[in-house]
Image (cartoon, rainbow, N blue to C red; front, top):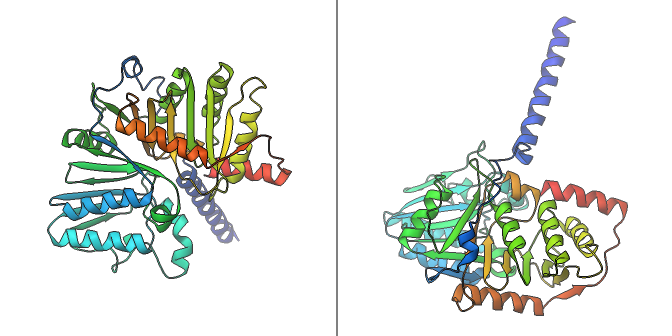
Length: 389
């Protein structure tokens, strides 16, 4: 009898351990590093960058993946890729083909694929199409290609490609067909050995971003969670106009900052996808909260007609943020992320192209004029979605 009780107790302990491990792995309730009070200095806001020629905006997947493939084809030394999702589909297989060809030329390829992101590949896996990072037919075990799938690593939601330490392409796009040809999204490219090295040192090795610099890369990692602080700084410094285009929006502190801006007379335009692939009820709850900001000058909410996976800000037409971080508690506190912050002039190509593209996005949208009526179950799903994703 005592032996049976010991076995039951042992099974109970194992179940609790597995449950605690799963919660820690999926939700990371303790978060990453501390959240600083200031990321962007007074100098960042006081003077625009004199030269942004080494920074380029890439809009939508065909443009972004075209640049990635061009860089891989030209690679002679090294390729480093970090991604959250990598599917066995058309663009996923093309990337495998291009990387194998680079490896055959002697290029050393390093690939880091987040394990939690595999949740979004389960449908393909059940249909016999696992991610190429897991198969010998794909990338696993190929000469000159090192694939890292560390189950115990922090969730890494960032996406970037570093080629020959000369160029880095980064932003919101995973390696899958929906990002390539179906969804609206943004990436950025740094074309400079100096700033590519700074990016690598900051994002991979945790070295502080150098100053002075024409733009600033902020990260969420074990040393600090910087991105929400910097986003709230650019909201609080806005003098006239804020445009936010994001796929998923539910973070309380960012919502509060947007409401503060609207209350002090700033025109705030928020663009969200009409039918996001996830987080829909959390988005609707946020829309209702923003519309309730006050009768005088509530934020204007717009619904983009197709799926927009964007993560971009533009304040006063000259200060921009583009990156991988969603406006959700997970992205703000518990996932590794990166975002570039830029203060340019209205004539800088990076700034003017972003301003023009956001204007084009707004022209396609329908404005939300009244709050959404949500059922009790939809409100529960909104709260669950807010913290799960």
